[in-house]
Image (tube, rainbow, N blue to C red):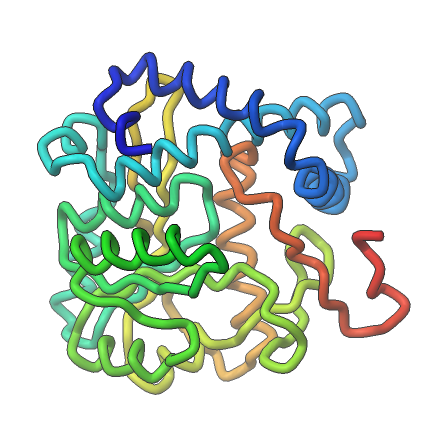
Length: 281
């Protein structure tokens, strides 16, 4: 991974396709999950188009390894040549409010690199979830600590509240299934999806500003970091309505480049009624 940082961009893109081809025989289970997600989220597409989208997604997953390496080991100078920013004025205005900033994003395949790229413009706290592989976990933790202002562990949400109350910028992606205990059930692509209502509750407690934040890779290997306007009238006081709004924002961005989303996660694993508990069987 580290060697890939020093390759020319064209070779990185070629290496990503090769990695996807090498990994393909070993990730059959993940491919089935991704295909099922695409069936649930894009029922209007013909089967052939969903298969093409799946193939494009796994080529993007190959690039994800290289992008992760770039986020850990590439120099600031090298990265600055490959990124364009849109909406930085929204970030500056939010910081001026003095109540903290939540950069609301989703699990896009470029999210690790996107976090590093936004840190070229502002200090930032990042969320961290312990990984099963101890070596990968240690390397990721070391490099996130090196480049970020601090780490917010998923198991310690109070640390995120403390950061926001100190007017810090926090990078946050709530679009995963964390089980029924902490979740409510708005829809995501029209399908009921376990969603944590934490975003609205943190804003209520801190007064933080929420800014949609999307990293996206372009065909030439450059990146666009897009920061949207601050959410207004949020929270509304209705947890379902607020969680639906967050899901809709993430969905809207996914639809712009669906091949660049992390479809291998079982987003719809937890369902509110038992008769729908087998969406992935």
